[in-house]
Image (cartoon, rainbow, N blue to C red):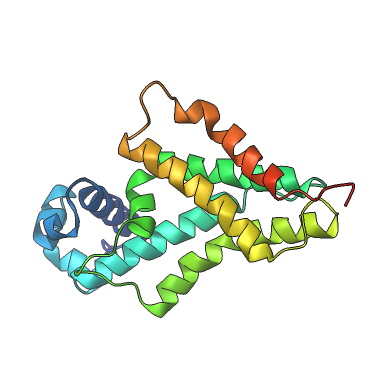
Length: 200
C-alpha cells in the first residue's frame, strides 16, 4: 500500500502563510524553522523537505507574494476607458495589500541581511507593474494620456498607491484623515495630471 504524501501543497501554503505572519509581526530574525513546524503542528523534516532551509522558505514567501499579487491584478479586465482601468488597478493594489498585509510586506518591505531576492525574484516582482504600463499605453493610443514614457506615467500612479497603502497599513494616517476615503480621489488626481490637454 502506497504511503500518504504528507508534505503536500496544502501544508506548503500553511507554512508559507504562518511564516509570512511571523515575518510581518517580528521580522525575519524571529523566523525559526523549528518554531514554525511546531506552530503548524508538523515536523521540522517536513519544513526542510519542502523548502530546504530558511533562505529557501523566504524565497518561497517572496515568490508566493508575487504570484498572488499578479493574480489579483489580472482580475482587472481592460475596458474601453484605459484611464479608469489605471484607477481600478490601483484599487486592486490596495485590496491585495489589505487582504494580505503579511505577503505584501514581504515584497515591498526593506531588505534584510537574511534574505536578498535573486535576480529572478526581483524580475517577477518588477513585472507586476506591466498591467499598469499596458493600461497607460492603451490610454496613450486612445488619446487620453500625454505623450510620455508609459513607464514613468505608470510608476507615478504606482508610487501614489504604494505611499497611501503603506501609510494605511502602518497606521500612520494623518490625524483626522481617513485614507480609505481619499484613496480613489488621489489616484484620480494623479491620473488626471497625466491626461492630454484636448486643446493641445
